Amino acid sequence: MMTCAEATNRFWEYLDESLAGPHREVLEAHLGLCRQCCGELELARVLRGHLASQPIGESLPEDVRGRIDLFLQELSHE
Ligand SMILES: [Zn+2]
Image (tube, rainbow, N blue to C red; front, side, top):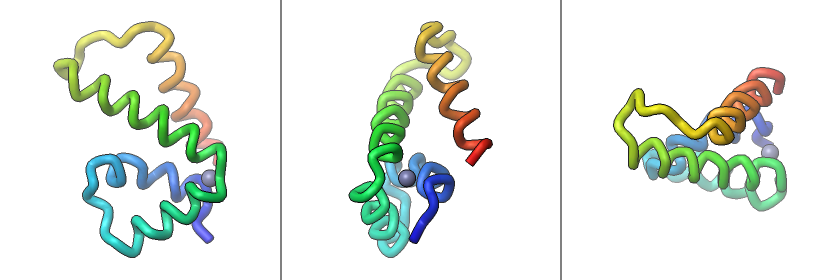
């Protein structure tokens, strides 16, 4: 079973659709069981869409920045 930290580490690849088949299946299995990662994947998806629509270095809204900080802190505590 994949841990939450492993799952979140793969979110970007997953959203880029660059995650190889077997890894993707393991991640999807985890997402099917883990509410927390489902929520974080949604956040990552929103973030990714936001970043893709803005030039790098463009300032993020304060609330989005706060959620990113929180998200990264949670990852590092896992
Ligand atoms: Zn999880």
